[in-house]
Image (tube, rainbow, N blue to C red; front, side):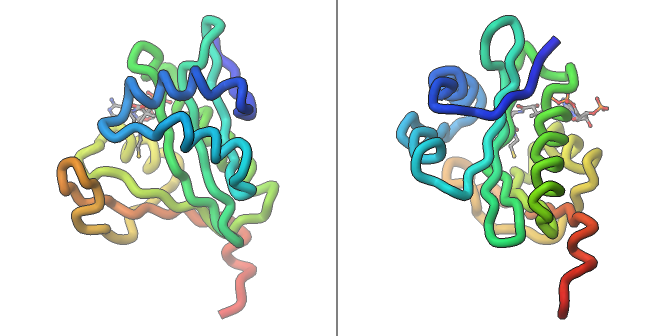
Amino acid sequence: MFEIIPMTVEHIDGVLAVEEATFSIPWTRKDFEREMTENNLAIYYVAVADGKIVGYAGMWHVITEGHITNVAVLEDYRKQGIGDALMAQLEQVAMEKEMIGITLEVRISNAPAQHLYHKHGYRAEGLRKNYYPDTHEDAVIMWKYTPFYEGQED
Ligand SMILES: CC(C)(COP(=O)(O)OP(=O)(O)OC[C@H]1O[C@@H](n2cnc3c(N)ncnc32)[C@H](O)[C@@H]1OP(=O)(O)O)[C@@H](O)C(=O)NCCC(=O)NCCS
């Protein structure tokens, strides 16, 4: 069992542990402190299981759009629906705040994440060439639009 709750400064140690176990270019403690204390656009949730943080996801609310910054789940806790639940939580916030859509970048080689995003209705809409400094890999730009998109004037 796990629960999804809003991230606070108290969760930074746990989120950092997930981050460092997951990404080749991890965000630093300062990055997460800035997200929690200075960035008014930031919307972050953590997944808690067995008394510890096992995953997190974040998004910036940029004008009328959601820009996902990161989604990560500790390896031992993957394939149990936690990534799904974190994505669903961000989508719920996007609806509450009447965002027109959510966008993200994902490594072209990252099939598990792309499956997760496809399952949630995200579609590839472009590439950012050489996006990742470590491997020079391209990023796939994905978007999921909400019903509020239809209300936009041209
Ligand atoms: C991507 C990630 C967050 C998925 O988390 P998770 O908790 O394992 O995901 P879930 O168990 O909720 O799975 C949800 C869906 O994701 C997809 N998925 C997850 N793991 C997968 C895998 N290894 N292969 C293929 N599809 C996978 C499936 O579509 C799955 O739905 P299904 O079980 O109904 O088929 C996790 O693998 C992770 O942290 N990866 C490393 C970090 C990362 O790549 N983050 C994204 C950066 S853009």
